[in-house]
Amino acid sequence: MSATISPLAPKSYPDMPSLRGVRMATASAGIKYKNRTDVLMMVFDEPAAVAGVFTKSKCPSAPVDFCRANLSHGVARTVVVNSGNANAFTGVKGRAATELTAKSASEAVGCGENEVYLASTGVIGEPLDATKFAGVLGDMHKTATGDFWLEAAKAIMTTDTYPKVATRTADIGGVTVTINGIAKGAGMIAPDMATMLSFVVTDADISAPVLQSLLSAGVEPSFNSMTVDSDTSTSDTLMLFATGAAAKDGQAQIVDANDPALGSFRDALNALLKDLAIQVARDGEGATKMLEITVTGAESDAAAKTIALSIANSPLVKTAAAGEDANWGRIVMAVGKAGEAADRDKLAIWFGDVRVAVNGERDAGYSEEAASNVMKGQDIPVRVDLGLGLGKATVWTCDLTKEYVAINGDYRS
Image (cartoon, rainbow, N blue to C red):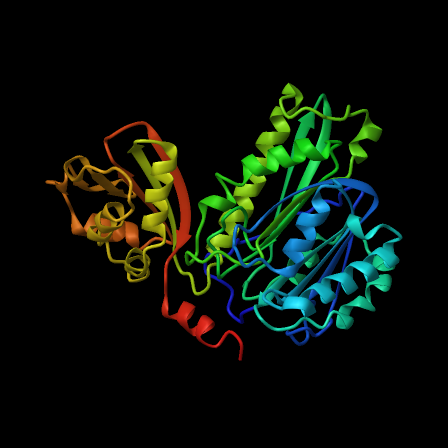
C-alpha cells in the first residue's frame, strides 16, 4: 500500500452490509509487509456454490492451478488469500505451499480440501512460506465475522492505494438478495479473464453451473475491458460464491441460466463487476487521470475492443494524458497499428465533446484550447468512430506517469 492515496480514489466507501452465510477474518503474518494485514480467510458455514475465472497466462501461479482443479466440485467452504507473495513460478515448493495451506484450512473449517480455494498476490518467483499463516487459520475461523468487507479488501492489497469494495441488491422472484464484492489490483493489470484478485459473494440460491455462466459472461464488459499497463498477471482470479441463504426467505433455487427470474440479478452482478473493475483502473500505479475509450463504427464488437485496447495500452497515448496534451495523432497511430479494419479517410476522433478530427483530417473547427481543457480533467472520455460498421466497445485505462516507473523500478526492494 503506497503512502499517497490515488487522486482518483473514491471520496467515500459504500456501507457494506453483512451477508448471510459468509464470515471473514484477517491476520498479519508478515509475508512481505510490516504492520498491516496480509492474510484473509472467508468462511462459508454451509457449503456455498462456487464459480471462477482465472488468468489465461501460460505461466499461472500454484493457487490458480489449485482452484481450477477444485472448481469442478462446485462447492466452497473457505477461501484463503495472502498478499505480498504470488506463489507463482515457485515449482515444487509452490505446490507444497498450496497443499499445506489447503490442509490447514480444511482442518480449521472441518471440510474437504476440495472445498478450499486459495489465492496469492505479490512478488513472482519467491517461495511462499505457508507456515507463516497456516497456524493462524484455526483462530481466524473462530473469530471470523460478517461485518468485515472493508477490512477484507485491505488485507489483499499490494501496491493498491485504497481498498476496493462494492455492493448491490437484486430481486429474484420477489425475494431481495444482496451481492458484495472486493477486488485488488493496481499494476500488472491487463486482465485476460479477470483482474488480479476479486471475490464476490451473494446470499442468493443459485447453482454452480448458472453462477459460472453469469460470471464468464460478466467479465467481458468489466474486468476484461480495463487495462493499466497491458500486462496480464500470473495470478488473475475472480470468484463468485452463492451461500443460498435467501432460500430461507422463499427464494426458489435458480438452476437454469436462461431463467427469466435472473434478469435483475444479472444486471446487478454486471454493474458490481464493472464498478470493481473501474476502481482497479482508477488505482493504476501512479495514475492521475482516468481514460474511458469508446470505439464505434467498427466491423464488429471484437474489432472495436481490439482497437480500443490498442489505444488504451499505448504508452504514447497514456503519457500524453499524463501531460494533459490533446495529441490526437497518437490516437490515429494506435488505431492504425491495431490490426483491425480501419479507413483513414473515414476516421473521426473526440476528446470529451470536442471533435478534433473528422473524415481523416483535423476538424475545421478544431480548438486547441477546448481540447486542452478536456485533458485537464481527471476523467477524460475519448471516442473514435471508424465509419465502417456497427461494432462498438468501451475500455478503461489510466495515464502513465513517472510514479509508475518509480513504483515498479524498486518493487522488490
